[in-house]
Length: 485
Image (tube, one colour):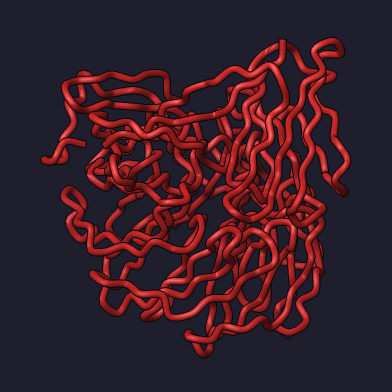
């Protein structure tokens, strides 16, 4: 039996407030919509179970208007202001601000940063005390966090696709915008940011770091892309290196780019010649390398279900793991300040790790942000909705296969179940191959992963127990949920 994933989108009362007694749910966010007139929409690319990636019409329609999010859910991004002892930690549709002056007891200062999309990436600019937020389908948001208790939204820009990450240099923000590559946003007037240039990378832009005249983009299955941004209005490709798996993040230090390359672990790329980057070393972490931060002679890798890994990079050609701390859940992002690493650990919230002894990192504190979603409440003309990506899931059961065509792009995703064999076939057309197909269970754990090389059907589920699974094929705007019996 199949279930087509549908959503009813409705929108926060005009005063922007939520009665938390009736609206608190665990999940990536609580989204509040007017439900006087529902509009049924097929929605969302699934990536790491952040359901609801992108709407073709963004948020608003004739009968539906988005007003706001409430930040609840597992964190995917973290940033630190070491001078003020403040940490910023994403939580679904918003950002928590913490006082970390006492590492053993992070104290929440504010949850008032409520974004229009699911927060995927953060960049904090100390000189201006501004927080730049990559908010998925909502693009880039700019917040003044000089007052950490009462942050103020300055402006926003809806990028072309799905904002995964952001880096800032000078008067420009550089956004890793998934299948739309790198977008260059003029932020000299933060109240009115404007795109001035772009470079469409061939893969899926997850992360970006900027040093000097170059932007370094972690471009998923297309590896590391080096882009000349000396003329922001006309960024051009300079060089590239195709890493073994899917580049998820990049950190640049000196003449090297350090790449979190998912199942291929940690990669060291010599970028002294930007036109010809070359790998000089690697370390295959035990988990899935999601993010990387560099401080001094060490790289700190958020390694998904293998926690935080500490790697000695004093000899770039021979990186060596010297220590690790296995966080409770899935380490997705890491920021380092002084003797501490701050890890966004998905369902287990913000973890504070003492790294003063790299060979023996130790957790000294944590703040457990709310977990996955599980409910909906209605009051008057408003619906308060929460789930993995902040939206209500409606399932329409079908007995036959599903053909779902992407918006006017000629892409077709077909899912067909063999009820007798207990297997499922997935077939794709109209996207760049090879493509990665991932199957997740309801906890967000990858239970099956395949590479699609051609348009022939791929068989899934022969070793899975009955249940609900999320099928993710990169290159599609639609998610399919298959219930195997």
